Length: 424
Image (cartoon, rainbow, N blue to C red; front, side, top):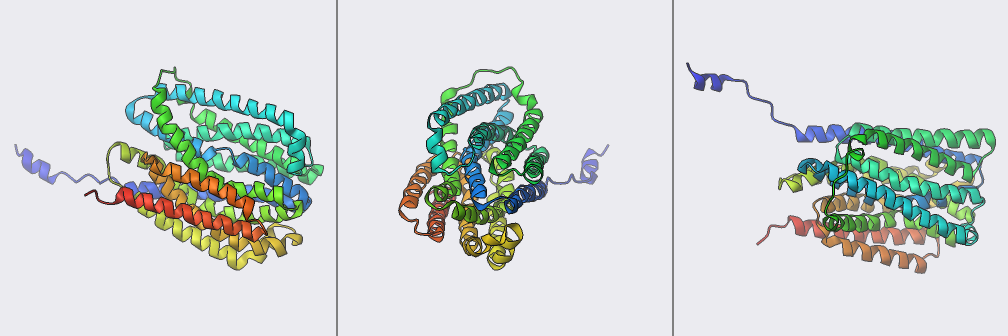
């Protein structure tokens, strides 16, 4: 009889808590990233069982795999998956997935032809001790192309549970094989890269299984021009950031002694560990920003992620600066301490602006704000040229890296401010 009174007395429904969900998901990914990162790091403890030159060779083979545009590929498929789920275009997405897998396979087959033609020159330039290691690296490159495709699908589906487990099991697979081969069969750089390959097989397998509901769908046609309009800027933008993250290791290997490159790889391994702390927040943020942009919703996730990144990255860099000699002595042989401990603070602080810039790049490109992409490409090219001119010492290389990372952060900050500034 009294519907109005009945409605008035009905208990209020709890409001959704998007921030609680975000922190729960990013918290799990942070735990998984730290746990997986620690396992990845344990592989580098095997440097105590091999020579500095062999460890440097492992570092350069690993850097080749790191140059695969895995971050661009993952972000492209995270964006496309998030959009496909919003628009009911999963069958079109299935066609994109198959095209990407076949296209990257063809690309790596071309790479293999090039390696076959110039393997002698490559072996000499990078001071590689084993031809088997070089060809194992080619297989690692193929798997490194495929892994981010499946990670991007899981990220776009917001399947953060298995995204985290994939990272952990990837690291465990790498450690298990590399550890057995080095500790029990006197292996060195080739056997360590074999461990990397096995870990990738495990990680790709998990991704294939978890995303089978997408790539097994009957494919539908899709607008290739529209897809390229989204993919090309994303690929180029994230590739430029990744180049700033990885190019120094290959350059040092080519221009410094094998022993010095081993020391440098050791410091780089510790410094890049800072990203274990901060990347999970950007990973969770990306598909949520894609959804918010598609729905024209406002979100303050960027502010939260930037604050968290500043605290974690700067705190980590400060810790590495204070504890540099002890950390190096714990992780590597005593021969690393003098050089790597001197290099480590420079390397760690160079990673801080890169970590912050990565968050801003994720935000801009998730919103399809592609005007920054030409600037990113110019910075990447200028950085490559600068490395050829300023390399009097390892610290000079890192100063160059730090300067360009600061320029990257400034550019990202400028474009973010322009996007958020009120339009008059």
